[in-house]
Length: 114
Image 1: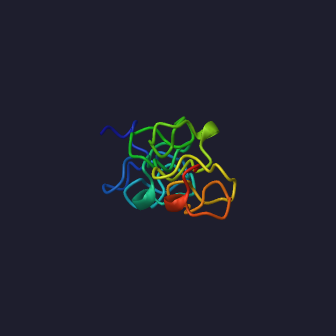
Image 2 (image 1 turned 30 degrees about the vertical axis):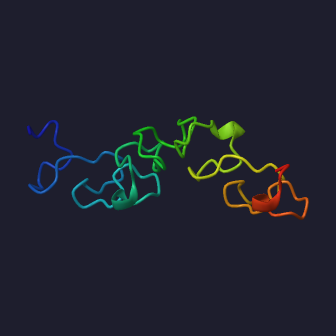
């Protein structure tokens, strides 16, 4: 890299400083300065994203379905849990886990109306 493009022309171990914090990217543990360590950052060079819950390469900030369960986050009471997407009785326990998801006092396995 030519010195004119090198952020550290006198340091052969560094040439870039993505976030402009004065620490070269090779030594910087947070290259985009988003508060997410690069080791834990799904997007280490994008300060607007850190997490990709469902691994679809869309960061959770722009992903309409963070957990990838096919239910949009705005309609999903459990937007980060792909195993749950509804809570019919509103008790905070997803219907797949809830043993009485209509709160009638009868377990779903014994309830013909659940």
